[in-house]
Figure 1: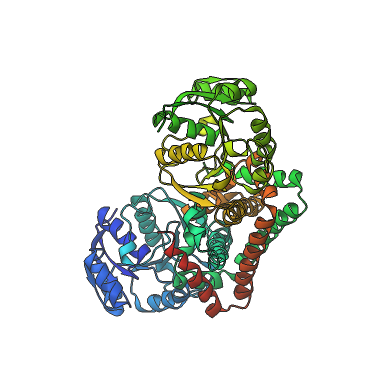
Figure 2 (figure 1 turned 90 degrees about the vertical axis):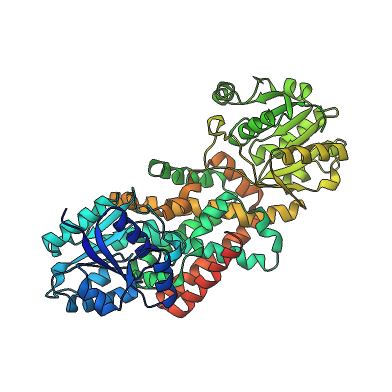
Length: 283
Length: 283
């Protein structure tokens, strides 16, 4: 591993802030420069000592050797080409939850090689610098996409960075990435949001309903606290894949509905036994 | 509190076994007698020292002062009247997740007063005696239904029992209970089962899908490991309420589908902001 690097983090919220803590702890950074459009977030990021200083975008880009972009995915497809236009030989990575549109936005860009597309599979339902978690990312998967389009030195540094903070690297084509995350991340958020709305709708007339909420309810609904500024752009950028999964999920729910309507214990049992196969994967 | 009582637990699985541990720990039992139709469960219950001995149903009923029924809800609506036919002055309680059908099954029974209808809001996705958890139930809610139909001494003992094991008692009419649990427990299980089947369906052709599963996915899907023998009877006994919630949930999911199809960021954001109101309830 080379010497520590000056690292700019554009967007010092839950993800950027948690990564900043790890970059410092694992001695990957000689200096951490935050860029924030929100004055509140900028203040909180300094107060929580996530970054050493807050600088304007252009200054941070120029000074840093590594630039990490952690803004919502709709802004990333504008920001990544903009940053590549401005850099010399810096390494640029983004941590967005979709990859295809972002990569498409810099297709053929002369600095394409300086960019590494990444998606660390970690998050919580909270947001902002104060939600940053020490030791986050450890033991989790990170997906690197289309690595053959990144310069070797940039890719190697990014691989070492994720390895040092304890992540397990998986490589994927951007299209496959977007499909897979629709199944193992994006759909879970939609079901949680929809479940919260289902129950909140009922609560208007039945105020006692939450006194008895159990841990099972809490675990299926907690993602419904997640931030709309992050998730609306993800749902729109990954529209086609998400619609496929959502249609399948509604079809699966409709089977439960049909079998319950028909009091078909045999088929209900079969559906549940199928679902129990998830034990192979979730211990 | 009176002296310790001889307590029979009919069904020494996850729930019965976890309760047995607490009854002993809180010095509520002078003796714990297990009743089990499964020879494996009987052996495991003794091995884990959940109960002092396993006895045949009739002998256990006769010997015990308190009889706790923890079998699946379809068997409870036969078992509760059968037990009331056989007892003298014992206290009988069940811990089932539905209450209306069970209470209906003993409407007008001469021993109705000896029975207390209860539903402790605790469980995990695992089952059997080996899944029993020490300290379970603590800090959770327990619902007592139609308490005016229980004899005062029976009700008081049961209230003291739940208080001693650390539960927060809520009273409800059986009909209201069944409606409320459809919202805060039963629907969560259906969405988890359906989500597991959605993803497992995809996994047949995309085997890499689970390498990248995140904590969010795990929390929304973990209930899909739950046991069909417990849940099929619940879905059928609480059919009408569950169908109401399920239809509302499918309607909520269909809104997400429609707004994603139309790339309607404004309305998607409004749906998520509505869902975020769950923060009022889940901290």
